[in-house]
Image (cartoon, rainbow over all chains, first blue to last red):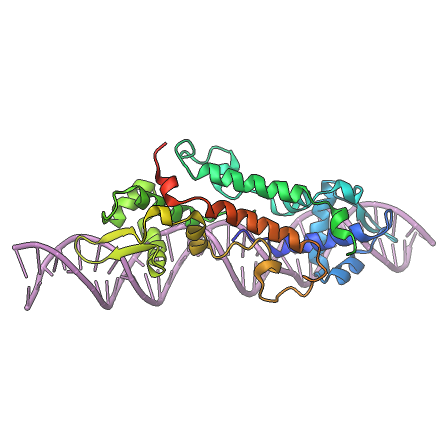
Length: 135
Length: 135
DNA sequence: CCTAAAAAGACCATTTGTGTCTTTTTAGGG
DNA sequence: CCCTAAAAAGACACAAATGGTCTTTTTAGG
């Protein structure tokens, strides 16, 4: 359980690759897809989403491609993951949209809150710059 | 993402209810299902699984039903969740079955390891006894 | 214009989730 | 020894999510 989907994996691979490129270099989708071993059309979908929220910038036409929307040390892993997988919500109880009438008396509720916050803290503490840095 | 399924939710509700019953009381499946508001046939499936690994004990025939397999302070939330949802694995990389040829060079890998351990630590620190305790 | 590239949207197959239904086994009580 | 109440087991079914592909459209450079 608690598993990232392929989409999530591919997204991370793709955007980390972008982060590892020289700043201001426009990368071809086909190059990125080949480099990180992800189906190109699938990665296209993912990057289109990212582009809408400014995580990456896209350029159309000849010489087009993708680059990061911001400097890699300003993008956290949490942002990337949530952009592609939706918010980190271990349990329906903690979504906060009133779905759970048991939340008042439910002892499990605070446990999931702790889980959620721990995950978010960890992911928010990692930037693309760190992930792209060569070992 | 990272979301518990209904099955997981139902399982927790059901087994926490069992934990809140007097020890050695055999509970009717129909009573449990009604009390925690879960489809009876679905809960049956879940408890059958639990019974196989000793998390609950089942009794057939007249006067049959379910009770906890062990004292509630000896059962952790982690056990319950993993029994029903499978192991806590945020990423295929950390499953350890050699699927990820990138793990050596992958900077994301250790992050998911941290996530995994944090979740397990939290869930392992909570027992059914605590969850069943009235506030 | 022509070409290269991303954007957008339709489409589709497979898997997973969320159950139900039926039949079988087991156990207790009269 | 039946009868009944209960769980076990297994087949079935439908919906949603996952993991893509394909085609058409838009955009930009030369």
